[in-house]
Length: 415
Image 1 (cartoon, rainbow, N blue to C red):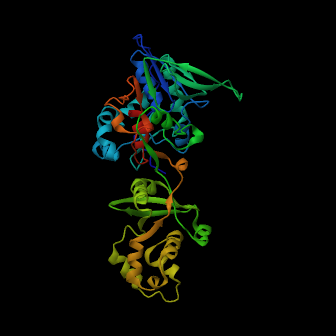
Image 2: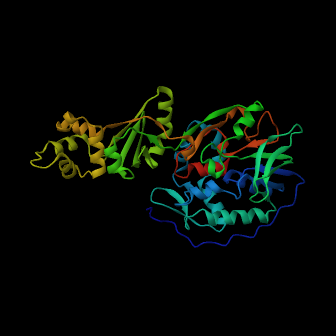
Image 3: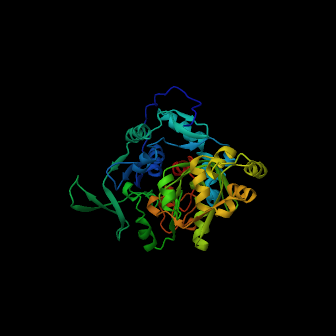
């Protein structure tokens, strides 16, 4: 559990005063964080804004992400924060500098939602859940005159360039087709994971059929399959491994992960998932190495293991000599040859550099987020489609990725 700091008294949001209309209309397709933020900014600039959402309510993935605590951004220094966006940093940096972690926290305060910084640097609402923030946000949009049409599923454009939607009336199975047009269209349809929450990625075929290049979806912030033995699954499935460092290629992270029935998952795995996934895509195989004793150097581990163990079993010897818990000991037995177990120096090296072979990433729909999407070369600096002036793409539709820790949501709120 994170330690709460910077707690403040919840504030009362300022009343919304709609701006003077500018005579222009904006249509936003998708009512997730990116779409809702676009609606707020456009309505605040005088546009008459209408949102269309395929699901029966707004922000379903947002609500799911905040079920165990809404990690809305991160409080680390800005340069480190910007580095989390990898290859997409150059395109995102100007926008993240304008609306970064500090501005996101101020925005939350303006909605009457105070935030705190946890011991890890992650930023959460003091109420922890996403639903109070979403309710306050929707009230603000209503005060700005935004209209939202739910159960309107976008299927493309007609020959006149109007947006086409399939819509259902209540719980009926019969759908009808409606069209809509506006001066500006914003597509904020999400990525390709968590289909049941609305991000089905079917928009990609619509765009590619109109000549807009989209890079295939790849799982991001995902778990990986490992060929565990039935014995390890029975003994350790659901157990955390901590503290531990994980290394793949040139990337090393410290944290914790969970042994699942199918492999590995959890925050430290998600942090290296892009490199691990790309290694697997390029070679058909991938390996992550674990340091199960990150607070001890190799010499110390070797010295401790070399002490006579007497009548102790190897498991008890590892527990007493190094303080390893049963899950770490089970992992060692799972992948370490017996002859290594009986050689203190070699065993010490295995504990400090334990290889776990990955068979494949978990399925796309299970991933927390996705890489891939609209190619950057299809967009100008304002995220407008070059081949379709007046239409913009935002959020997870674009080909960028970031680790968990507040970076994903910060990106979606910013672009």
